[in-house]
Every structure is written in C-alpha cells, then in structure tokens.
Image (cartoon, rainbow, N blue to C red; front, side, top):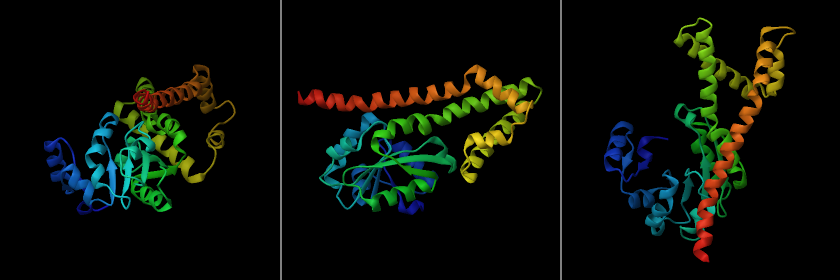
Amino acid sequence: YAPENIIAADIDKAKLAEFHESSGVSAAGTVEAASRSAVIVVAVKPNAVTALLDEIRDYVKPEQLVISVAAGVTTETIESRLADKVPVVRAMPNIPCAVREGATAICRGRYAESQHIDRAVSIFGSVGKVVEVPESLMSAVTGLSGSGPAFIYIAIEAMADAGVAEGLNRQQALTLAAQTVLGAAKMVLETNKHPAELKDAVTSPKGTTIAGIGALEQAGFRAALMEAVSASAFMAGMIEEQPEQEKRKGRE
C-alpha cells in the first residue's frame, strides 16, 4: 500500500509527526482520519478502544470497514460502540509482520461479508500469511502465533548458547541457530509435509539427531511448548472476558 493512500492518527502529536516524516503517510486528527478512510484500522491499547470508538462513532458509516488489532476486544464490543451495521473484522497479527513474514488470524463480526474479509486478507497478506478463524478461537491464536515468536526467540537463544558452549563465536552461533529455524519453518510451509515426517527424514539410527531428540524429550521440550501456548491462550481468554464481565455488571 502506497504511503499517499494511508492516513495516520495518534494522540501523541510528536510521535505522529515523526512517523509522517519517516514514512511519508498523511497525518491527521482522529476524526478526520476516520471520516476520510475506506478502511479504519484500530491499533490502540485495549483499554483505549472504547474512548476512541466513542470519538469517531458519528463519523463511521456502514460503507466503511473497521479492522481492530486490539488484543482481547471482541467484535461485539466494537460493534456496540459504532453506528448500526458497520462491518468489523478483528485481527491478531504478530511481530514478524515487521519483516513481512507475519502470521495473522482474522475473524468477522456480524456485519462483515466476504468482500470485507477479502480486504482484510489483502492488507495483512502483504506482510505474511493470513487465516480466518471463528472468534471463539482468537485466544488460541494469541497463545500460538501471537505469543509464539517469543517462545521461538528463547529456542534460538538457547541453541546459540549451546553453540557458543561448543566453541562457536556468538555471531556464528546466532546466525546458524536463526537460519536453522527459518529454514525448517520454510520446509514445513513449502513442502506441506507433516513436521514429524521432516524430522524423520533427518534422523538416522544411532545418529546425532536422534540423540538430541532424546535429550529434548527427556527434558520435556514438547510438553513445555504445549504448556506455554496453553498458558498464553488462557491469559488471552481472561483478558477478553474482563470487558464482558464489566459490561454485565453495568446492566445489573
């Protein structure tokens, strides 16, 4: 997307001016940006979403599309703060979008139709891969691909540390570890083979790899990763439930 086709707004005027200078996108006030945009991307902290939507409510029409990347804020919550029948798509991108290798999951609100999903896929597809899921699975997505990069960073760091312990210098070890993870991931995506099949292809009887796999299994590596994803997903679900609980209290 060309910078001249993007309008940015931010409560921090200095940050907005700096972003305008560095990126070439237009800078505007919140209301102006919302009223002029075909697609409005809500990219604020979850606790700032309702105030933002209240500010732009009267300027957002059903002909526009609202995409939210605010973690834990449901499409129902967003729709309740906008005019009737405004299409809403919720998205959970991850940090590798910064290098165009992101993983983004999207879900549709009540009024979002196929063309709105296609628009969201086009936007996030420009920085990685996109899948559509039911909104009930967005917490699972947060645990897997949202938090997942941090888990992989730890794995890369640990592999590099081991390489240093075996005699490699730090840069060599880090390059080899990171490229190994990148290459393995590309093989999963490009061959469509199950990871177990790819693992077996490099595992020889009484070889080095099976010895390492045995050490990983003994240390609980597989279970630890599964627990990490589950813990993150659980926390995401708790965060998502908080606004709904507060909303119910307000009705009582």
